[in-house]
Amino acid sequence: MSSKKVTFTACGGANFINNSAYFFRFGDDEVLGIDWGGHSKDRQRQPVTYEGPKPKWLIYSHPHDDHIGMGPLFQRDNPDTRIFATEECKILTELSWNDKIRIAERRNQNKPFTREEMSAALSGIETFHSPGPDKAHPTRLQLSDNLTVYAYHSGHVLGGVFFLMEYKREFYLFTSDICFRDRALLKGAPLINFHNNNCRAIIRESTYINRNFETRQETAVKFVKFVESILNNGGKVLIATMSIDRTQDVFSTLEDLGIVRRWPVYIDGSGRATAVYMDYLPGAKKKLSKALSFSSFREREEMARSKKPAVILSTSGMMNKGTFSAFWASRLINRGENGIASVSYQDPDGQGFMILNSTHGQLLEIDGQPCYRRACQIGQFEFSNHMDGAEGMALEYRVRPDTIVYTHGEDREIERYIRSRTGDGIQRVKSLVGKEVSL
Image 1 (cartoon, one colour):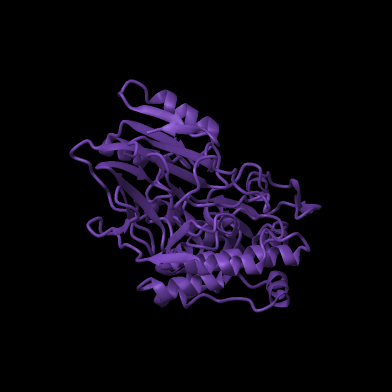
Image 2: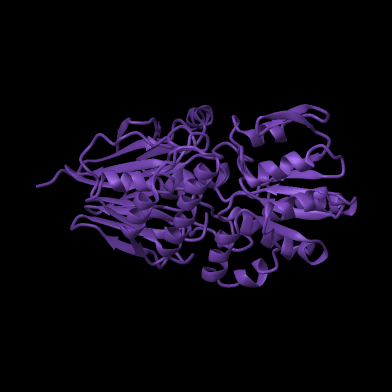
């Protein structure tokens, strides 16, 4: 008879945001993995190796690089592990993996994996139906006689899911990256309640664990006011966005609020991901097909030198070195009529954080060139596709598990939150890489 013991181990994405990789061990030898992600600054870095039994299954929760970025290497090294993803996640993952190879080739750097390894990994992914936002219709994966996984719409990105795992009639909730609010294109994640107190544990993201957001409408009004003030003054606005979801969400917000109708708005660096959204998400094509694009660097340079007002949504969201958004930042930052806006999380050690937190007149280094004096306006707007602190707290008290494990967040913020939540009988654990937690 197999043991009823269940444990959780983070091999990355524990008390930090990068290299997400998580493993559940059910009983003696049934191991389920979730994600095998990349690192935003070190494109060769993998999560650490899981030291337990070989995983029987691994599911990709959503196609952001920090969750799927090093997948081909995991699949190469674990050829007997069955791999699952939604169809949309698989398609967007292919785009992300291709981008990693192209960026390495363009920079004359070592590729994180070969095209052959990427192709083999893609052919090994089994797809399942992407659940809708209705909580009554999750997708059910029967992995073994004792283990069932229910995949729910996460509200985070197209094709993204969170998981309710049932093992021997007890439940374990894994949020991955989750958003409960409706946004311009995607509905929020469904709310799950447990009335019979049989959810043993929540393993939850902690990206904004101590921060509460204003309403999306309030953010949108401030954002559009910032954009319009620059355009009316003849300037250009760089909106640094993530390729998958944030670009499409923010463009749709600009469309809803009339900016696209009055000024040229470009999507630069995420055209293929935008095409997937138009193909798979009902209603998206009507909005996203209005985006303009650039076909060459010459066109980008001509636009940068022109005096025409325009909005450019460009990747990466953190303005990482060598990206389109870093190019646009270097071209727009030294003119007072221009603006740079952030609409997502910024790594405190990243180039984008440095730009956004600079002072007027400060000399900045962008892509290794220390010759940019900031004159433009800076705006930061939280169009988050994560739950905030209040929503995370509500989830905990709605489910009331025995144990909560905190992942995918900043170490000090997780510790501060845990210190503030004592005395309610729930065991709270900060995840650490390689540390096994009994659930």
